Length: 109
Image 1 (cartoon, rainbow, N blue to C red):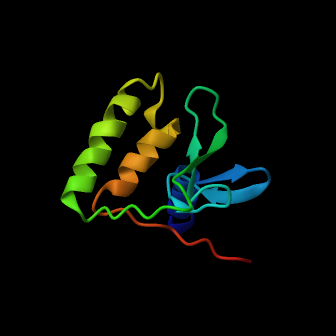
Image 2 (image 1 turned 90 degrees about the vertical axis):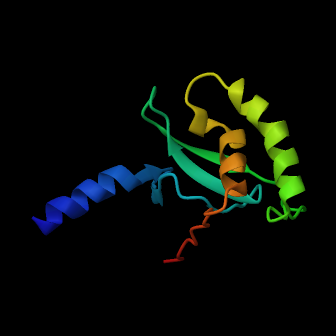
């Protein structure tokens, strides 16, 4: 029974991207941008890498005025996204400004 549960967990949270296993919907430090996240496209079934955030800027999300200004800028952008919202960098940028945002650290094998 334990193996079945592990297999089910693997199917929900892991996927193949360019031949390697990646965690889905778990933001990590990026290579091109500040962060990256792998998301499964519901329409095609393929895994896509979403890059977001500026490497050169700190966001200082604990300052309420900055947070309010950021949400005022980005929520209309996200509202204009057609289709699956979590395929948009704006969606993940908004998630990164929320309180419980955690970065998953990839292990080198």
